[in-house]
Structure formats: structure tokens, C-alpha cells
Length: 125
Image (cartoon, rainbow, N blue to C red; front, side, top):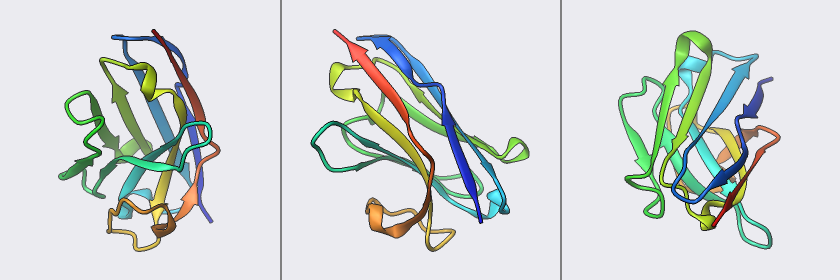
């Protein structure tokens, strides 16, 4: 069993920054790639960013590339999402997730077994 807990969401202003954290427990976190997804009201949950288990490779959705940065600290069992140059369209609930295949990052939500409860990010214009 694994538990994922997101934090750091809240209200941000357009052009501002927020940093999300995803703390994991219950499994060998460092063996897993990790992804961030987000879901806006009445929209599908979408891939935002992913990072390999070592942290050596990262992946981003085109909509956040150059603005968001994913990183991890395996010693703290935590993954971060630094969000800069925020836009109102970034407003969503943000989730971290571990994939079914521990080392494999995909952009499909069905490929992920473990999810956190989500943290709300609201960006005002």
C-alpha cells in the first residue's frame, strides 16, 4: 500500500508562483517514477509533468513547459512541482500519482494506480 499526500495549493495571482509537494509513504518511493496530473471543473484529468525514479529525466505537457518544474528528493520521499508564471487556465485540482509500471511515465491516467487526494490551485487574473 502507498499513501500520497499533496500540499501547497491555494490562491495565486496570474504571473505568480506556487510550489506543490507530494509526500509518499508505504512503499519504496525511490523505485517509482512520479507524475502530476490536474483536473479543472468539467474537464478530463490531464498529465502535467513526470519525473523518473532517479530524477534524471523529466516530462512536461506543452501547456506548462518552460513554466513548471518537477523535481524530487528521494531522501524525503517527496516530489515537488514548482509553478511559475501562473495563468488562470492553470486553475485545477492537482494530483500526484505513481504508475502501474514503476519505472514508466505515461500521459494516460489509466496507467497510474496510486493517487493522492489532490490539492486545489486557483489562479486569479
